View 1 (tube, rainbow, N blue to C red):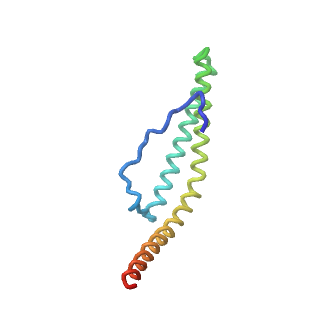
View 2 (spheres, helix red, strand yellow):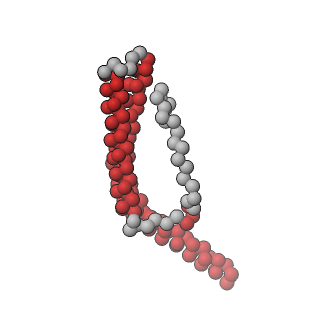
View 3 (cartoon, rainbow, N blue to C red):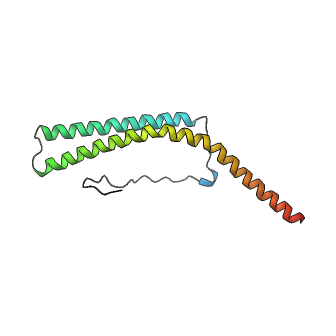
Length: 128
């Protein structure tokens, strides 16, 4: 990822308390979560567009002058880019979510088969 003049910083959200080896997906509740994620991304997109609009208004009405004007224009461009990124993320979320939801039970079955094969091998070694 390239560094731009108007860097929004790194994400500071840390996910803790999830034990990946016992992660379980409740597929009956997951679609509601997907819809909520889409709604939140729509809110982000519209918020970034509003920030873009307000920053541009401030510059266009010449409330801010000189170097600060360029900074505000840069922030406005960054807000618009983030809006577009939110929209793109929302658009791809549904497809990826559906695919992941389909693949999850297959992974569970694969894991179960691997465990059963290990148990069978162990039994065969004890008998042999």
